[in-house]
Length: 183
Image 1 (spheres, rainbow, N blue to C red):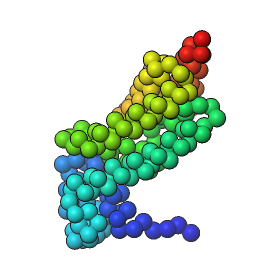
Image 2: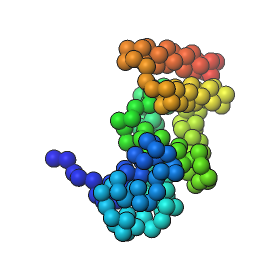
Image 3: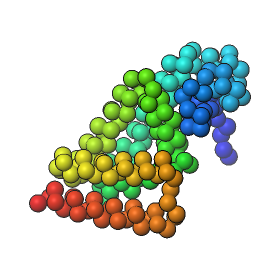
Image 4: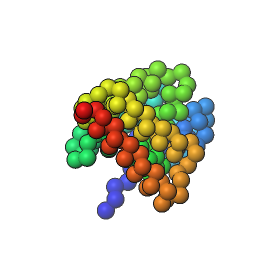
């Protein structure tokens, strides 16, 4: 049995949708309320302002990131492999959708969103560094994952078969980099 999202969750999802589809300027409180199917008063009950709505999105981003950090830390193939392997953008995951929506806000004037991304990035880097042991190699692996994510998010995913081959080729590079760090 699936649980229906709460009004608060619907508001955050509508905010994400508007940010992803139409950008920050289109994500007004009125537009978010209409897209969520709630009155503006209903939206304001959960989020008193645009800043509170942004804070709600950042809190959701951090919550989803905590789950990702746990998976990354427990991955038997290591944090570096996990980071690259999961850097294949897919619009179907809640985490990816929240990341893209928050990126739209980070492109604007909101320092709180940029600060959240800096915090998350440091945590990911720490997990990769714990796996590979060398700061330069960890940074190179992060750039591989970030580039993979950026290209997929911006240009779309390559055809299914070639995507798997591309990721595996990059994982081979990660393995080679990891072996350099162990010398």
